[in-house]
View 1 (cartoon, helix red, strand yellow):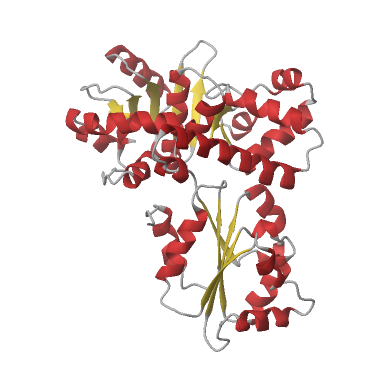
View 2 (tube, one colour):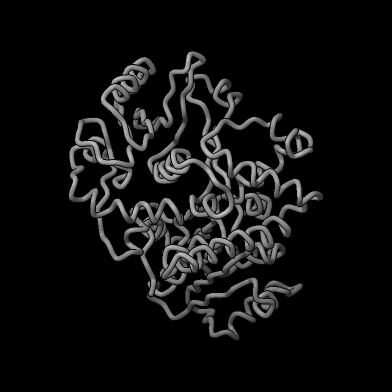
Length: 394
C-alpha cells in the first residue's frame, strides 16, 4: 500500500514538461515510493523503472557509443517512436551516467526522473551542461500531518498561524496528543512509522543509521578518520537546539576547525543536519553569527543519545516549521531571545512544553522591537488562550 506524500502535488505539474525531475533526500525517506506512485500515474506504457544500485541495470548504460544505450532501452520494450519516461533510482551509484543522460536528453524524446541521497553528491555530479535541464525537489522524513496520514487519520492543517490559533480546541488536541508523543519518540521515517511495535521501530532506526554510515559516509565522503567523524556526529546529536561552537567541537573530537567544518558541511548536504542562522537585517552579520543545530529526525536522536525533553520537543517543532519558509532565531546579549522566526511571514515563535501569559507578553515585546507583526508560543500541552498553539497543529 502506498501512502501519499505532500511533495507529489509539487512534482505533478512538471510531469509533462521536458526537464529532468530530480528527487533528493536522505536515505529511507520514501523517494522510491514517491516515484513508484508517479510511475503508476503516468498514462503511458512507454516507461521503465530502473534501480541503479543493481549492477545489471548499470550495464544498460555502460556503452562507449551512447546511441547504443538507446538501443538497450528499446530491448526493454521502450518504443523509440513515442515519448519515453525513464525512472532511475539512486543515480549516485553510477556517477558516469550523467554524460549519457545529457546525450539522450538532447537527442531523443525522453523524460528522465532521478533520485539521489545527497545534495552534496548531486551538486558535484551534475555538470553545468545540465543547467536549465532539471527541476530539483527535496524530500524529508514525515512531518506530523503526513505522520497522521500514515496512521489513517486525515486532519487538515491550515498554513495560516492565526487560523491555527483560532481553530485549536481541546477535543482535537486530546485526539492527537498521544500520536504526537509517538512521533516525538520515534520520528518520521516511513519505515519506522509503519513498524508495528517499539522493538521493530528501534531496529528500523538502527538500520537507517547504519545505512547512512555505510552507504553515504563511507562511500561518498572519503574521510580519513571515520572515528572522529562518528564522534562529532554523536556530539551534535547531544547538542540539538544549541549554538554551533566549532572551536569547542574541534577540541573535543581532536581534529582541526577546518576538518569540523568539512564534517558539518557533509552532514548538512546529506540531510542529516540542519543549521538555523541568527536573525539580522544585515546579511553579513547573519552569515557570521553562530548557527543553531537541529537534526533530521527525533527518532534517531532518541535512539542513540539522551537529550532533555525540551530540546527534543524544540527539534520536532523545527522539523515541522521548515515547510513554512526561511527560519532564523534571535538572541541578544542581555538574554532576550526568540526560538524561531519565520522571516517571510514576520512571525515570532517560542517553543515551550507549557507556558504562561507572561511568556507570551515577553515574546510579543521582543518581536515588536524587531518589526515582527505576529507572535505565538508553540506548546506541547493545550493552553486555551490567544497566542498559544499546540504543536499537534503545526
